[in-house]
Amino acid sequence: MNDKKLSNWIKKKTNPAKHVQKSHAQSKPVQSGQHFTKPVNPKKTEHTHSRPHPKKKFTKGSGGKKLRVIPLGGLEEVGKNIMAIEYGNDIIIIDCGMSFAGPEMLGVDYIVPDVTYLAQRKRNIKAIIFTHGHLDHIGATQYILPQLGNPPMYATKLTAGLLKNRLREFGLDKSAKITEINETTKIKLGSFDIEFFRVNHSIPDGVGVFIGSPAGNLVHTGDFKFDHSPAIDKPANMQRIAEIGNKGIDVLLIDSTNAVKPGFCLSEKEVAKNLEEVISKTKGRLIIASFSSLIGRINQICELAIKYNRKVFLSGRSMIDNMKLAENLGYTTFPKGFVKKIGPQANSIPPSQSIILTTGAQGETLSALTRMAIGEHSQVKIREGDTVVISASPIPGNELAIVSVINNLYRQGAKVITNGDMDIHTSGHAHKEEIKLMYSLIKPRCYVPIHGELYMRAGHAEMMRNVVEKNILVTLLESNGDVLEVTKQGTRKSKQKIPANDILIDGLGFGDIGSRVIQDRKIMSENGLLIILFKAYENTKRIIAEPDIISRGLVYVKESQEFAQETKKVAQKAFEQITNENRKIGLKDLKIELSRHISRYIRKRLRREPMIIPIVMYS
View (cartoon, rainbow, N blue to C red):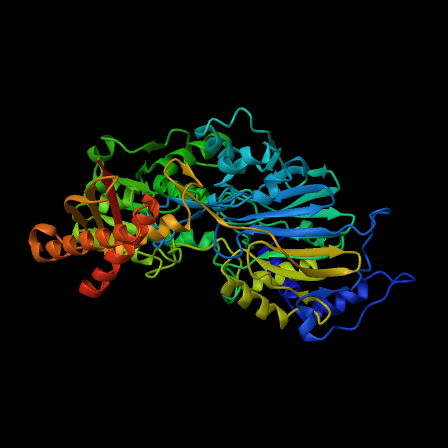
């Protein structure tokens, strides 16, 4: 299909009015006993929908079983995507991702979903299906897989390779059961019939998923966009998507990240043109920071490097690992061995003949670009005449970290080019017209925005209420753990709520810190720590000597002798008062009372509320 035909086809498909008329004209006659209900009032449309689909065929003997859609992550954040689909005693899982901790979660590395509900039903789990290889869709697998009894996994070639690398780090690769799939694969998993369709995203090999069951049919788009000139990947298969839509789709679960942005997402071909302009005009050394998963983008940069006689060096572990995997699996077009890991050689060639590809486009603390910016990278020292290109857009919450890195790069003498200066990055998530196109191809009875913060999904839902046919239900699931039920009679939001808490990963710890630990860390970071050591006789509870004080982040004791002496007197008086009133008081209760008395004094004296830790040593 040439560009002109494709453009006309897209316009035709994205015109909702034309689509509605045509789809009704081509529908099969309504069978005897079927009927279309009148649109229910607006207050009820958020909860139930009962328009039988004329093309729908239901399996005999399915009884009153419900198809249940249970998002356990991805509905309150951009990341941590995981969704359970349940029918009777059969469960399949779509994706198993992580999310990065925000600045308020002090010391936490990242967050994974709570799968308690699934772990209790692990015998029912038929498989985990992955839509693509980004960490927000595969990054929790090494933690979740053992809890679920190591079920089979299905993924496309590149996604499977990324999964194997991740599981290998945790010694789980040999026991993992990973089956490669493509868009033509069909799988029978218990009561479910599974099929796939190709979509575009910012990483190759993305797929959407069709899930057929006796109670109804679902489509999960995964993260998607429509790009007729993607890097490395093939364009989304719109004919295949339309074929899926003709099966009769009860529920469409659809990406929301950029749903309220106008028009179409910028093509990777346009990004490549702008990057070529930068590479061709830059006289000095080029350092390009990007996501390590943007394999197509990185491949394009390498092709341009060959064209303009530059060598390419990689910096950052994930960048090196991902490109090695992509090269081994055939997802690159440059000569084998052309790209090299950063080393002394990078500094020995003229600056105008090198490109350094690095991680750190989000200002991550330990990333290669951040270490370059502060002069702590072992191989790369930023110097006058360097040009740093940040080929990425800030993930919400990372803006300040990125600004800090850019400031430090300028201090080192570099020039910095960002997406704000020119289009050197494009998203992997569909804009408004692509969202409408997906709707027109799938033709669902119930439309459910997923993947994103609540405001993203709410805006998506509001937009689509003005686009869809009047008898199409647009449902907003508000949070992780909400349950959508699909039956022969229709679709509704259940009153049941499944626990879907955040599990925090801190170093080697998995789920061993909770909200109390984070709260304690926040108190210490904002108001400091005060440790008071008491020595007393166990029998009489009489204090042997005045208490000792250790302060961190509150006041510097050596420079605040007056405060220290006052605090010691208050602490000793509190100890004597409490023990006089109750000689048999337990150690735990004594510490609680001491903390309360001392905290009251410090709050009045300094208007601060530090963490107070009383230590009582009996003789």
